[in-house]
Image 1: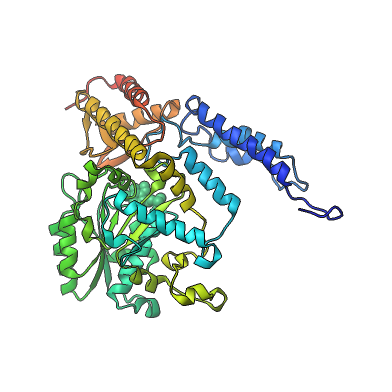
Image 2: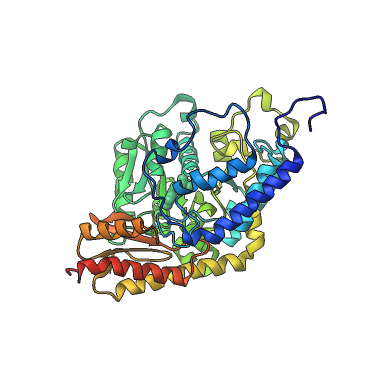
Length: 484
Ligand SMILES: Cc1ncc(COP(=O)(O)O)c(C=O)c1O
């Protein structure tokens, strides 16, 4: 607080309380009117900027003016990811407890780069990630009480990059951090693996040319025998294979790579096995879906995003390793100004050694809130419901002669297309998205334009999925029956 004779531009605690209530009211109102807003933002490029003043305000403005402009200037440029009619990409859902946990994290404003810079940041994170190990049916070696442990990262992209860096170091006996890469290190993904692995190959110095894209089967899952052949060929050529990334639920079609068979290739050649379960990892909360990750006990690392499907607002990625020493040895660096007694004692975790950046937010707070508020039972209930609704939608597609499923739908993503061809599918999608009634996106499977409908928004119910199917059928009417 400012002394009476001190000039201050700060928000006073009383003002903060008043404005804070207004913001919470605005968010609550926003969530209750979400269904009346067009899901996909309808603005043109540059429209939002054109509505903003050219320069910053010389004098401060009342908070009410700021909130008014969110409504007037910003909202039209928002695609409503929290709309129950959002079926695009993979979800990025949120919930009341998640949002409030995030707000509290901002309120505390703690920076948890070291245990000593806020012990609760580190210890709650370790604890919640340990909770998640049995919740997701993950192996005990990922527990902090074992050889491994978990950490929250911003995104799956960062987690997979860390896995690749640790794999690279392990394969080179921790020399590539010192000397750089010599162009001999190779890594393996499938043609369907998320592009973040390609980026990781670029950033890690392994190089895109040394990232092998292994072919997939008719279900878009990696072929383990093709993987084995490629690894053997690379070894014969004097290269140094370091890591395989298998996916539980690929982005394009939700394909599930055969983990156990891939793990066997990794075991034979001493390769790091990283599992990317960015969205579908959340399904593992339900024991009946865990067969999709059978073989997980053989993985060296595993990542999933509570910020996709587990009601924890962006950003929140969980990343576990079986051997934390390999990760820490890869990423640890200790300048004099960070030295402290707790670190030197070796009795604490310093998460700055577990990821790329130094500073870190108190993300575990929102994850803790979500898990405690819903409980395992609540989370399972909603995930099962999303899967049930997606399966119902897949059934509608199967029963309609004009459409076909383009890939298996193991969980909450349905890939489908109108039989009239690419142009028809593009038109159906464009018209639906322009209508604002729902939002879905596309991919290409076997060279054909394919529509994707993913059920994962927090408040999506049966009526929303039913309406989506009705709207799709309405737009498809223009094309008559499909050509088989
Ligand atoms: C399978 C998979 N891996 C990784 C990612 C990247 O996620 P993030 O945005 O958290 O980096 C995605 C994003 O959709 C994904 O589907």
